[in-house]
Image (cartoon, rainbow, N blue to C red; front, side, top):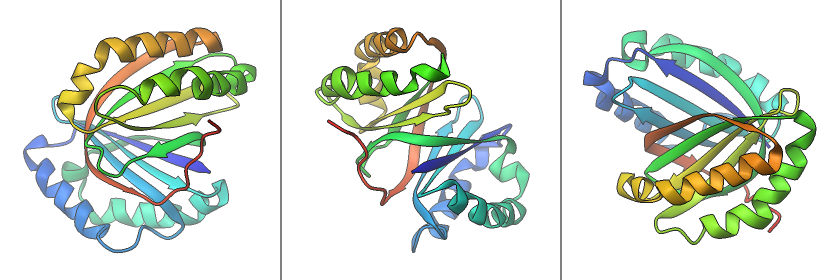
Length: 205
């Protein structure tokens, strides 16, 4: 499974609820052609957002790109924000509940040849503890095997649960980074007004 992650900034947050409604209306029926899931993440204070779409393969993402381009043409930039990047990842872990309302996104950078060991450690040692945290609603782990970049999306039932988990999450993040010989590049927190997910569970343990 693979993921397309689009980042936006400079959004007019006074109209963000209009954008949320537009995206919800568009996703009320079937998911975009070929998509297994989609998540909309917003940081109102920073004026930034992420759009995450899950697909079975890289080829399925390429086939969907014209639809993403049309969507960008249909929604004005002052509403959707300026798209500043589009990145592609392999989905290494996928364990998601659709009633999640908040997300913490940790970006790690380390040796590309340590990716598999890092994922194994997360499945065996990190995930079991994460699942025990109050308000935990799942995880999506994305990896780039060429650069060694990992993006870990931990999902929470609401903003309060996300905030209450900060200390425990910080410890788990440090341990995950140490196991991979990786550096913690950034940690971002988002509300998640939309999650549609039909992707299969992807975790060994």
